[in-house]
Image (cartoon, rainbow, N blue to C red; front, side, top):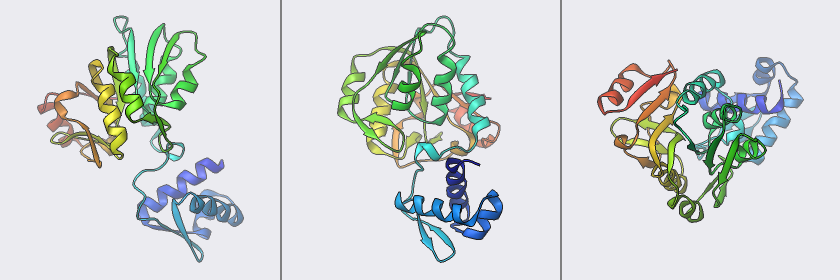
Length: 252
């Protein structure tokens, strides 16, 4: 197991249990105690946990894991991305993508499909697409949000103001029939709203863990979402509420 995978696994266990032990992690992850101690030190330096004698505890101020550690539900995200890619038909000439693990998966699929204009505020997606001959890439400016590799804030918002797109795909941290779509950061939420307003059609990509959930900053109301693509782990009752609110639901 690579270190990045171990770090993600450690953070996942902390999120579930609130604390972990060095010996327990070493046994579960099939690595040495020394490696686990180094991993815990690395995560503590990033203020993602607090080490204790023999282990670590969660830090209460953690609300969102940096993108590079969000490796869970990889198969579900891949399936969601594949379903999203099928919406990019021959009549679609331009799409927008915000940052996130699922939109990153989608970008990689679009990179090898056909000629397409892609607008994004995500640095990692831009890096993936910039040398792809099929993609006419446009990247917003803005301040960098390290957790998601996104460019956000007034510069990004102004860059999006004069753009018109066929489809926008949004990764979110929560979608709820009553409150709409949301993310953890208020500046990111505003930039996501600006991106959303460029599109004829808005497609939200959210794995089942985010359906029926709320996050700190509202991006937009449910009425502004045309399609939700999720996976089979999404709560059925929440999907029915979204359908009743007028959202087309696709279960990948």
